[in-house]
Length: 446
Image 1 (tube, rainbow, N blue to C red):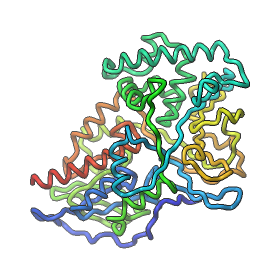
Image 2: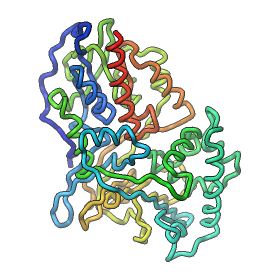
Image 3: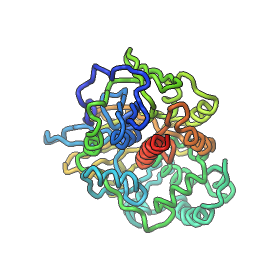
Image 4: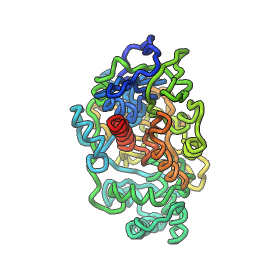
């Protein structure tokens, strides 16, 4: 099934190549490469003062904001998201302001986590004390009790250590220094980190400690109460994408992969589907590795920074097979982490999102998105399969982020993307907005 995000008719005619389009005091021609949230936000605000063209290699605009039209068992259409699903107003301030400005419809969501380890016979969900203990069908084991005690100690130490984490220090270092057991890592911090960042189990110990603690604190995840209230987009994320692209919809080119970007003294040249498009500036709203591939003449600083940010490919499977959820329905959560063997860190991330809980779907059919477990899903219940790449965070990433921010504007080029923050929709929106503001400010000062 093809994604149902907004897809205007394919454009066959690219903007007429020209040189030196901009004149002092006149709007510029700006090319935006990538129509994910960063590129769309940048284009939305830049189009208020400049002539903006957006090029996207996929057949839909939105990137991870991807809505699919499926059918439930009664034959009714249901719009489900397979990537971006939820946000909250406290920690997504830029994205929230944009949604309000474009009048995108939203409604409350539900955020919860369940964990199931077959090897350890341990399972729990975050709904309440009963489900945290894995009750009522199983009495907590000593391992389960040990994990709960360590969670309390972890929260206390993490809050105290939040402003003292050193550059290069990892989550694994923190576990070792404070002598936490593998039970905490494998059954609590690991599953939560994997669920939040779509990271494989083995990557948890290499996660930058300062970034992790700051994120967890901001989202209220280092305390029992006070978590933000989550929301979702009515009708799927395509509803905000449709509104966001209205100012430049006629200059949005889908199925238009940019093969190469060449910087010139006067501007940039983009090689797109056999055509050359010239512009005054280029916004690379791509993943770091994609930006590196298409830049024809990267500087040593650009190459070093872009190479420092790695990605993990995750297979996304949309389906209706509820066997991928906990066997005990009382433990069904929004995010459902499952592993056959928590000691085997070579296996890819395995997590199932319950879209009915996250999107508040009005249907009796349970729609799920599962990462990396297609072989365990009933083929008759699979609706579609995609591959999304997610940034992975190592101690090298914070320095690379700072380098790329400092390089914005050099040689007519602006980097933006969620990878310059925590990797979420807010980070993508903020990055796109910052680039639009920077371009406008530099133009005004010229």
